[in-house]
Image 1 (tube, one colour):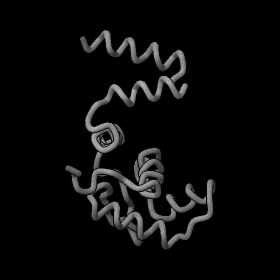
Image 2 (tube, rainbow, N blue to C red):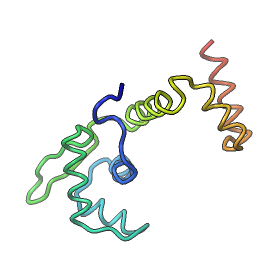
Image 3 (cartoon, rainbow, N blue to C red):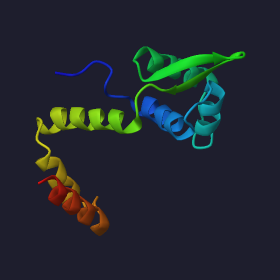
Image 4 (cartoon, rainbow, N blue to C red):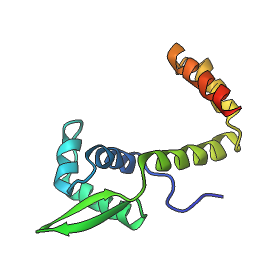
Length: 124
């Protein structure tokens, strides 16, 4: 069963990456960062940040005349939840098919595989 508000849309995740990188950011800060990569409307960024706040991913405080946002949860925690949701939905809760897919699709470098092997040895 889907956990409410756990999986972020592509646009929401893009905003969260900016906020995680900056630590604290205004709508203007996020807008300027996103504009470097693609066309985006200021009002769209503002709306998406309000939605992220409502979903519990962002929190804000008023500083002078602007709201300053920061992540309500650490990046690692949000991404872990999103990956778990993806594995549940796509691979029916089994992580092995995902790993097999990544290896067969050449998505993992030799260094990635060595790191995974190290982590597996450590967790056993």
